[in-house]
Image (cartoon, rainbow, N blue to C red; front, side, top):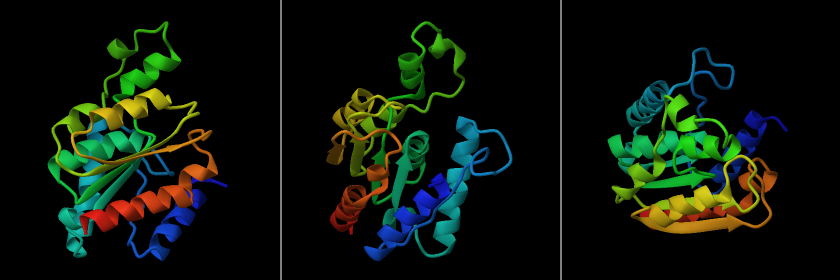
Length: 188
C-alpha cells in the first residue's frame, strides 16, 4: 500500500472511533511543490492550525499527531499553539541524532541546517503526550523514541509495539488508533 493509502485507512479508523481528522502533506512531500525545511514545515503546520480554527476546531480542542519527521514538526507546533494533546509516532530526540546513528563517520551535526529538537520542546511543555514506537525500527532507532518518552514533561502514555519496524502496517493499526483514542478521552 502507498503511504497516502495507509494514512487514509488510519484516518478512517480514527473517524470510526469518533475523531475528526485532517491529513496534510508538507511542502516537498506528497507531490507538493517546494523544498522541505524546518521553517517551511512549521509554516505549513501553522497554516493547518489556522484552517482548523476557522472550521471551529481551535488548538485547545485538537490532538496533534506527528509521525517520524512529523514528530519534530508537531513538537514545535505545540510550543506555539498548545493543543489538548500530542501523539508522537516514531519520534526522534532531534534530527541530527538519527543522522548520526545511520552515518557515524560523517559530521552530521555540523552539516544539518534543520534540527527539529523534539526533546527540547517537550521538556518545557505541559501538553499531555503519547509516544508510540516499534522496538525494531530501522529508520528512527527505538532508543531515540524511548528517550523522547523519558524526557517528556507530561507523558500520558508510552506504547511500544514489539517487533515493529518504522513503516510496518501495525504502526498504523488498532493499537495505535486505540492509543490516540485513549489520549482523546483523557483530554476531552
